[in-house]
Image (tube, rainbow, N blue to C red; front, side):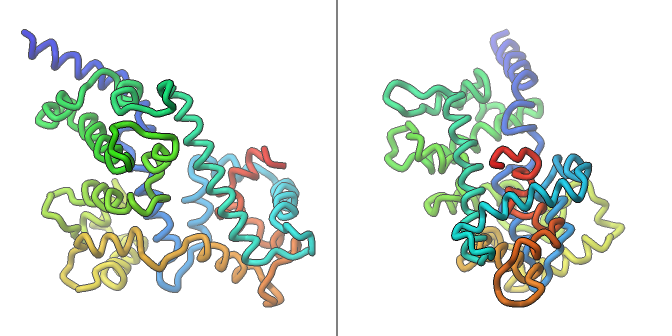
Length: 323
């Protein structure tokens, strides 16, 4: 009777909370999705400007499409004035990089502050795992989560709890079981912390390695990037992605990605996405090839900029809270 009650409790907890945990329980981890998106955005020598708009605006893309060109350009012009720090009429690559970093850091800190206040840290200014787990997942304990891995009804939910517990431990630099706000940043946004790189790779392998053989096959790679897409029909996007896998990802040519190859793909040592994005924006917009942009050159390519990180992927234009 006790086991039946526990099982019913787990199912009830799952049904109440699952849709509020990190969005939807069946959605891709936002950290890994962000890193995959960055790498897809810069593939060899190819850069798909349409991908900027759809991938980076996401659910807000349709809303942005409803703005007139004139209104979009007006709002973008106000942002250009902010990017041009020295007011010399030109936007340099360094100024673009500074703006991109600013929008990125603003998003991260707004997210961290909002969640930190939601979870209400203790009087000592730290947050415990037990408090975070209860607020986020309800009353399923770590032990119950381990037990639930063997059941179909709560498997995904339990996996999320144990995954977060592992990331929590990695973020807990002083190993006191509690997170400071600085450590909480590493927990929510591990891509921003050097010491969290290994946990990101582990999570990527967990997500993509469906047969648990510690390597990523071509089919697993495609299925993770484009879930639900009919691979058998091989649309152009699948053909191109297979070529990327074989040419750039699978460096030893064995047909699989091992941990080192996944790390080189998701977190390459020499890849700076801020530098790459700013360089790309100037290359695409610099009509007189002087290495810097006027407001007129930027406005002429407004559709490119509103799908880039320079406008917080369009959010700054949509909400224009900084204007």
